[in-house]
Amino acid sequence: MDILANLALGFSVALTPYTLMLAVIGCFLGTIIGALPGLGPSNGVAILIPITFTLGLDATQALVLMTAVYYGAMYGGRISSILLNIPGDEPALMTTLDGYPMAKAGRAGDALVLSGVASFVGALLATIGLMLLAPMLARVAYLFGPSEYFALYLLAFCTLGGMASNNQAKAALASCIGLGIAMIGVDNNSGLPRLTGGNLHLMDGIDFLVAIVGLFAIAEVFFFIESHGKGSSIGVKLEKVRIPWKDIRETTPTMLRSSGVGFIAGILPGAGASLGSFLTYMVEKSIAGPKGGFGTGVAKGVAAPEAGNNAAAGGALVPMLTLGVPGSGTTAVLLALLMTLNITPGPTLFTDRPEVVWGLIASLLIANFVLLLMNVPMVKIFVKILMVPAWVLLPGVTMISFVGIYSLSGSYFDLLLMIGFGGLGYILRKLDIPTVPVILGILLGGNMENALRRAMVLSDGDMTYLFSSPISIGLWVAAIAGFIAPMFLRGVLRKPQAVTD
Amino acid sequence: MIVRPDPDPAWPTGRTWISLVVAVLVLVGYAYTLKPLGFIVPTAIAAGVLSYQLSPRPVAAAVTGVALSIGLFVLFRYALGLGLIPLPKGLF
Image 1 (cartoon, each protein chain N blue to C red):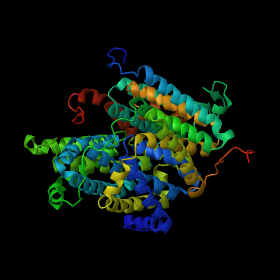
Image 2: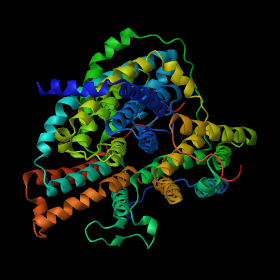
Image 3: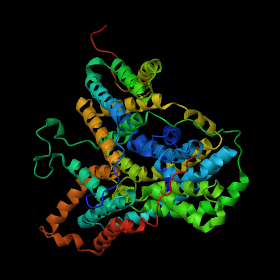
Image 4: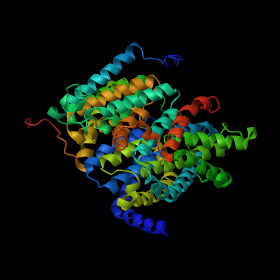
């Protein structure tokens, strides 16, 4: 059994006391980050990357810490959904639909425990799925040449743009902005500076961490200033927390089904956890029928999206690790982390650096159990943290972002760039242009260009080479379908709005 | 986008614009002063102003600024071991 041997290797890496400690810290931080409205998994991970980098952790440790934060944030998102009716992050939106009514009916504790267990089931099954599927996909990925990679990157842009936004043209525009930003700096092949405007600071290109922290974290601060930090008071009371065994038993099939659906949604490049929770909620709603009472605070309506979004979070790691193509905004940020640590994700990661991959998988398993322990008995602590007012939290987040970026390069220019990206992110989000394709463009732009150039060198400049293999044709078809199909499905798959009081 | 534009977003008006511009200016100023003036003073000012923008209570904002600045400095310097300069050189 290959997998068992690999897992043994993984656990030998993950069970060292230091790594274990990092996993626990990551889980704790992640849950807080997920729970606080306005700090989702993507900004949370983005803010912490520069700090991990300056701490001098090695690749495995940094990855363990960050993925623990990532999983933790997925768990934590439910807390504010249920108690405040404000999703702590985007995927947790569906949890508000039944979680908040349930909390208002005096069952806040039940809802929190149930969603914690559902998160655990989803994440655990997804991690097992990742373990089984990723090595297989990594073997397939060996067949990929430059033209296939080019098509694959295109697929990521198309599906992410298609699914994540409400308007195809805006998503395409966002991708192009990102690709344009990726071009800034000295061209690797010719050595000529591109789009630098003669500015020496721009010769190195733009560090994607600066862009990510600016677009996610700083833009969020501007949003809070606009809304004057309103709407973060706990509206429901949390009494004694008991474990609702009956609900857990009754929703077990729902959790299992939702984990499956969520995992598949997560694997699709670009779809990510939001789609996962959305699909699972819809599936369960249609299985339950009109008598199921979805939307009025039923246990299944809480369990389904939570199992779904956590499973999707695990699923999204599959394309990220095997192909180097992120499946969601947050995995895009994790990809940035890998690139900062000088690890190239892709099939070779599994053969060259098995200790990284399997250490990561083993710590995900451990993180899951830690998170279950933290989130069920200790949920009250996190509820306390939710009471930190926005006017303390947001300046704190800003200062941490500044210090993080400043400690990376020690240059004020990066800080100015970060503020600039914050402004850009604010304007883009105001115009309803998604920012995740911009990030993806900045991250993948260089690789995509290199793949295209290599393909052109191999084929002597023949464009048809890009469509020459069955794999690449399949990817092109999937890319076009992924971009166009959501336009027609939009009428069917309308996102339900959060319940209002 | 041109053929079938989405409804226009609700742009902020008047005072909110001013506080956004102030926030950007404060952050830009912070970026420039972080190196020459050390960590504590610019951070306290920037965090205080941001806090005031979010909730207009001067005393609470000032306390937040100072507390955040010192708290973060201790965290970064001693818990995480980053080499931050606390105060401008040559002052003491």
